[in-house]
Amino acid sequence: MGSPNQRTSSLLVAVLFFVLSSAVLANKEHSHTNITNTQNGCNLYKGSWVKDNSYLHFDSSKCPYIRTDFDCSKNGRPDRKYLKYRWQPKGCSLPRFNGVGFLKKMKGKKIMFVGDSISLEHWTSLVCLLHAAVPSSRIVSENPNTVSFKDFGVTVIREVNHYLVDIENRVLKLDSIEGGRKWQGIDVLVFNTWLWWPRNDGGKPWDYIQDGGKIVKDMDRMEAFRRGLTTWANWVNSNIDPSKTKVFFRGITPSHYNGKEWGNPSARGCSNETEPIKGSSYPAGLPLQQKVALEVLRTIRKPVTLLDITTLSQLRKDAHVGFYSGKGKGGKGDCTHWCIAGVPETWNELLYASL
Picture (cartoon, rainbow, N blue to C red):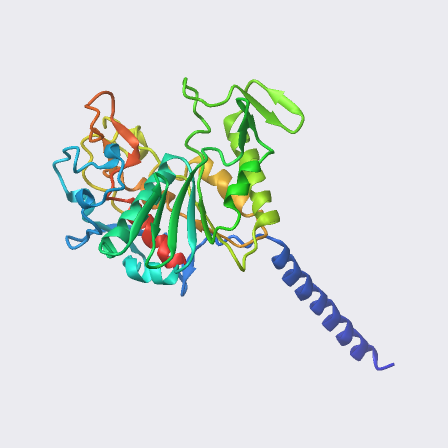
């Protein structure tokens, strides 16, 4: 039977084993979302923008895929400073984008960006980066949202889906995601949503919101966002095979209409802003919608990588389209969308590093 001390020691070992086993099991059952995005102990998303006169990924005038209102240079922006800043993580370096390396790594694969017009900018930037790397290769625009690099068998697709969940007969269905059928069979999926959730103007594509069996005229939009994103998270858990598909969620991209957020209450939106915010933090902090997105992402059991570009993009009040959309100088300009070339190339460097 052994002595009392031996029995006590055996009991302690058994308890310790149970605790450790439970911790391992709990870890397996909880989120696999990579929130910190560390590489070799370095967080790629903690850092600052540094001036680098050698920094230019491509000439926007030579890329045929840029929507006219995103091409700030073509639309007369006089300064080029916004093109000459490089994201510098603290304690390591972000690798420069290698278009040929990207195409070789993704050979034979399909990459799809799912989301709103910011997703369009992310898609456009990647297509321009790849076009600049292999301008003489066989590149085919199969439709306005699909570009194939035939020599590498790589297809880059954009799927317009503002909410990720379904809209049917002008009803926004927070618990329905039949649109996810289009995402099946894709090798790399890059999702984003938020921009249209608070929308309240005449362009809103729904009249009612449905959640389960209940239909309402409207509801708190942040709560609607949370419920819709949770439906997407459940779709990932139920439909993604990590051995076949890599999933990314790009964090909330900021707008810069309120100068109080960065300590300049007299600022007229992003107009006349020509330099990033210095340092590593944004005075107004993370937007609530990013915090909600992080909470939902932590519930996902399948591997999902967060492209946590919110803070680094908040620091770039200088890089929006502003008055250089080709639409004149009415109001505060476009302080939501980004110049291409510009900040979206950094998002793609981070995507490349995360692959």
